[in-house]
Length: 346
Image 1 (spheres, helix red, strand yellow):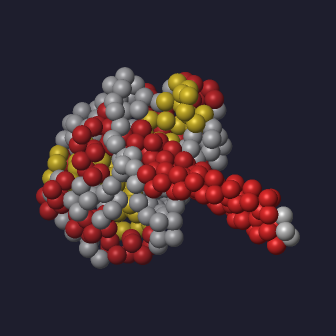
Image 2 (spheres, one colour; image 1 turned 120 degrees about the horizontal axis):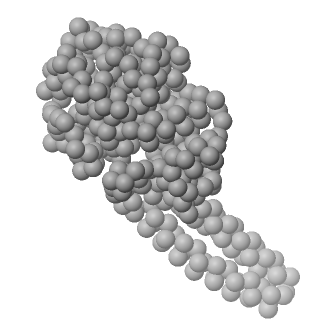
Image 3 (cartoon, one colour; image 1 turned 180 degrees about the vertical axis):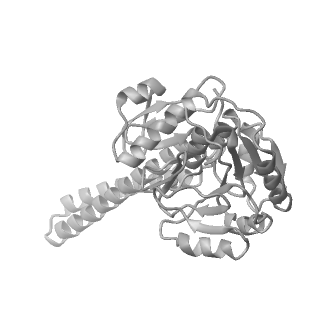
């Protein structure tokens, strides 16, 4: 299992992240001997170049958008590209339009896992403001690989849900405000890693599976997944394939399919909810179209003097209306369901 002496800081943020990043980067010294990688949950049409340029206005460090197979340089801040996954290797970065993880591309977990696998104790993971749970498993991977974990204090975060989710599931090393975080990160880089811990085999194995899928555009082999975990009774809400549970006793459950889509428990439930809602909308559309056709037939029969047949079609249309109303009520419940609990361990 590879590990380099490069100092790596990986930062994950979601809602409110851009403002938090500008405040954090303003506190980092120009002499920082580390490479900083940022995954910010973005819409697919966002301009990563514009965001990197904006970040550059708040720091003396060089700010760039990540590029595939470019070498990792110290004293540089790298912004992940919109709608692209970012992984790290020993000396280069990988940028690819791989499968979504936790419904996101770029995904915080994808970056954090690769950093933990290749840079181990030399990795510092940082979680800032946001929603959802993407980044929780990644922070656990960094912690288990000997790295340092830092979380923005929920009281200091514009959106505290993501920091709170991390704090509930990972025994993090530091919980600080943004004003304190810059000095802390600089000190951690100078201090260096306190211990060289072997990267756990399950983290390394999963990082390799993700890397092969995302760089070769191939589906993972069944053998890879069978070696990494156990096949479940669940199906992937993205592609319909089987899901494998990949976790060790006492660690957070996560799931992967043959095509490369990956989920923690919370994001899997959320994705299933989205798939169910989409199916219900299709069913509702079909029912409404059938009812409209029945009403048109009823009108035609009535105009033709076939009153009995017209009445039958009207009755069927009225029955269909009842089903449509029930389906609309169900859709309202599904759309507003609070289905984003954090995942359970083991």
